[in-house]
Amino acid sequence: MLSQILPFLIPAVIIVLIIVIFAGGYLKAPPDTAFVISGLKKEPRVLIGRAGVKIPFLERKDTLLCKQISVDIKTNGAIPTKDFIGVEIDAIAKVQIMTEGPGLKLAMKNFLNMKERDIILALTDSLQGNMREIIGTVELKELCTDRKNFGDQVQEKAQVDMNNLGIKIISCNIQKMEDKEGLILALGQDNMSQIKKNASIAKAQADRDVIIAQAAASEAANDAKVKADTEIAVRNNELAIKQSDLRRQADIKKAEADAAYEIQKQEQRKTIEITSAEANIAAEAKNVELEQQKASVREQTLTAEIKKKADADLYAAQREAEARLFEEQKAAEARLFAAKQDAEGIRLKGLAEAEAIRAKGVAEAEAIEKKAEAMSKMGEAAVLEMYFNALPEVMKNAAQPLQNVDKITMYGEGNSAKMVKDIVNGVTQVTEGLKESSGVDLQALISGFLGGKIAKDAQDGSTASDQEA
Image (cartoon, rainbow, N blue to C red; front, side, top):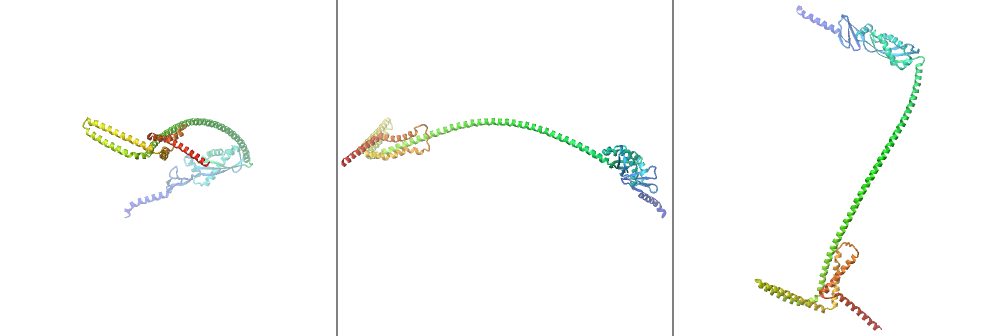
């Protein structure tokens, strides 16, 4: 049984041992620490920020601190400068162990498995000695005015020694600097005075430059303002001239337009007035003509009224004449009808018409004669009474056209008197027409009647006087 599992057990034990060995020798170095593995090989293996395996019992592991280290460097007493002024300086140097090439080997020889404090103690003496040597080569003023240059010199000189130790100086800065005599303070005060002096001078010069610049700027601004104002005034003057010219042209055009408008308006008004006057005159003429016709009708009516009694007397004679005329017309028409078939009929028709006309003329002549006889029988008083009764109506009808006129525009002188004269003439025409149609002279009747009346009144007055006497 054992012989059967032995071939499998031995390899398993070997594998387990290998796993245990590797598990116990597994290493992982941090970034700021170097693991140095040595033993099997002539050159050790260095692990920085990576993993590796150390064979137990055959290899060893050592550590080397690789992070940045600050070393406080002090002079520990006054160190004379190049100008023999003792100063005390406190500086800080930033150093780091070299991790590549020959520097790594030197660092492993000098600082392997050392703590940070031990490394600082090992480097302080060397760095202090280099700083003291550099202080003796520079003057106090240079130390005060250019500390960076001093730190660079210390770093440069000390780096030579640090290379032999496998150390790299990253930076060197002065933190504090003092002197027992107070010369740095005095130098600072002198420098401060000089600075104040220079500052005052600079300020005065700056103020002067500012005043000069302000004056120059003010002058330039004033020149620019004067130039601008002049240009603006010129432009405004040109604009005013242009505007004045435009206004003048506009006024001329407006005046021409107004004058043309007024002329046209006057012409139009004149045309309207003339047309209106002509229309009024034409209307008045029509009205006058109409009123004349009405007056004529009134005259005829008056004549008819005057002749009323005469017409009554003539009525029988007119009826008799009309009856005879009717009989003659009927006889002539009968003869005309019988004579239509031949030329004798035509001749008889002409004779019948002539006979009818003759009979009508005879009847009218007899009527007029009867009328004259009737009027001769009427007294003058009756005629005048009829005339004066009808006269107001005649005058009213003669003046009637004036009521239909809203406005009459008359040109020239004497037109209103002429219009009144025309109205009176219209009335006069009535009396003249009455005289021509009836043979009655109203003016003569009125004159005779008034003359007789006056004579009668005078006679009556004288008779009354005689009786009183």
